[in-house]
Image 1 (tube, rainbow, N blue to C red):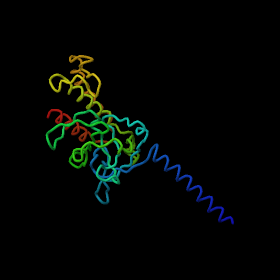
Image 2 (tube, rainbow, N blue to C red):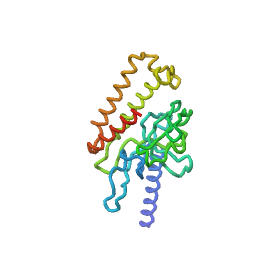
Image 3 (cartoon, rainbow, N blue to C red):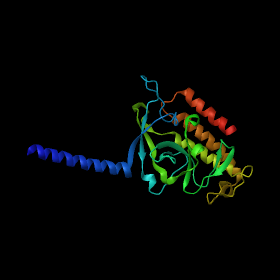
Image 4 (cartoon, helix red, strand yellow):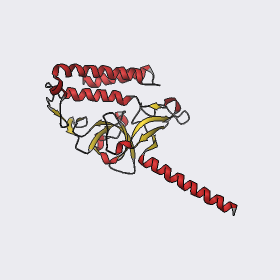
Length: 241
């Protein structure tokens, strides 16, 4: 009789904790492994010493952003693949609804439609992202990555999105200047140059670039100076092109 009571109590507790864990994972937060090299060097920076392959990073994914689908440029998200909903991808948001995005494959630009976003991996040479399957519906997003939990030496908040947001803001402000697209409105709101004037917005672009480079240089942890310098050089080269 005692054994039956113990078994019933154990089963009931397991079922209760299972439901609680499932609810937390579905509605609030979950832990997700990041596999592959598409988001390197942000994730999977180290290799397995035995197999010589990339070791998985484990990240914290928050779900509160799904209540009103509020995202920003530079956010790292987890989403279902548009071609196979059983597959999960981790990529960075580059464009939001209304943004114009350059597509290197076709040397063309396209406008991100309403209810969609444009995502890309931090390692373009090894990433299957919007450059392959186009804008993704916001409804496929399962959460936003906020922290690296494992490995311990890299456990921290992700520092790069802030720098990416600075660069994206700089690009948007610059894109609206008369010498480029000469837009008066950006996503239904007056462009910065129409509010503050060209004499203010042009130097603001330069300031944002300097702040982004300063942020990458001083806030990125556990990355060698050589890799930081390489990242800065690639950013400047991309802007120059």
